[in-house]
Amino acid sequence: MKIGAQLYTVRDFCKTTDDLLVSLKKVADIGYKYVQLSGICDCDPKWLKSQLDNLGLIGYITHNNADRLVDITDKVIDAHKDLNCHYIGLGWYDFRNNNLSDFIEKYAKVADKIKDAGYQFMYHNHDFEFKKQDGKIILMHLADKFTPEQMCFTLDTFWAQAGGCDPAKLICELKGRVPCVHYKDMSYDRRMEAVGQGNMNWDSIINASEKSGVEVAFVEQDDCNGDDPFMCLKQSYDFLIAQGLKA
Image 1 (cartoon, helix red, strand yellow):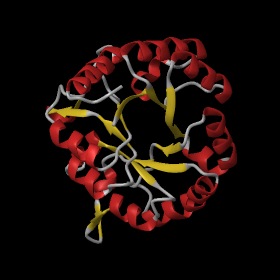
Image 2 (cartoon, helix red, strand yellow):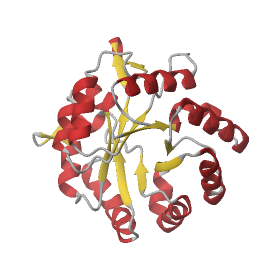
Image 3 (tube, rainbow, N blue to C red):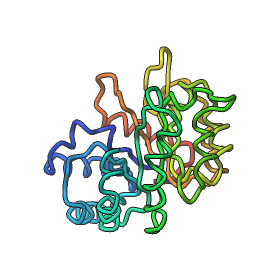
């Protein structure tokens, strides 16, 4: 299992192409080789691929605007061809105000188009997917309603914990469907922390990830609590390297 950086962590430093290049270099200098393309400025995917190549970085997975995924699925797929990026992610769906049937109606065709093009549709959770419906959490309803070929999961450890679930147990239950995870730590009062700086059980999470076939664990910290997000990425990187993970 490899370590990656979720660029959403440094989104405030990726608002222009010039700033994006500076941020990518900083991420590469920390030691990361894999990045998730999320929260960055609009740019030509061919140009971005060349910049990633120059820095020795691999754009492994994305998060995409929900409307673009539905309205211009083919263009989104073409962009991933240019990026040589296999995993096409949806980072947010508000199950607080929408139900499961709405999601299926909206994204089943998207998932099939992505699958037929040879790519993999990925769903990223927050905490509201852990509300139970008919005795089962929404996330597991999604796993039942979509085949692994249609949809896999980018399991977010922080939000799973916030939803009252055990991240390690979930990763094992979804074995084979979590090629990518988000590693994000939590301390008192649901405060987001660099990995290893909070209270989550990283021994069990890492062990479950490795046993379940996770390819890349992407470090993410939505809120760095006023600290330098690049420093937070380095803290997480150093901790995970010390646990035996590889860049």
